[in-house]
Image (cartoon, rainbow, N blue to C red; front, side):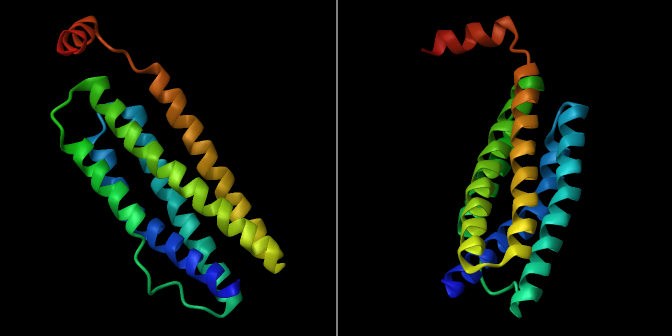
Length: 165
């Protein structure tokens, strides 16, 4: 179980370090200042997630490197595609929010799994750190949902969508 746990942590570490590189691009692509600021805030938060993971690895006497999270690589690729689309205004931001929420849901699943493993292994310090990060990921997902709810879809965009159907 410990080997699987360490492997899971390495996967999450890779995911978070990939995200540190991707979030500035998402922020740059955001149309609204609120979404841009949200991505920038999450970038700072993600740095804290990396630091927490490094503390867990240190406690285990393990190195955090050696694995690439292909799941996150795919999600980031999709997010990059959303950022490059020629959508405008709230539609562009909606595409970015959708990509960001897929990332958050992936992270929520990963941190929940790692926390359950830490609990089984009796690693209380890691449980505490993973729980803190898991809650931050859930909070970010809620913030993204609330921001998405604020997005306005203009009448001409609805007509164009409906005409395509």
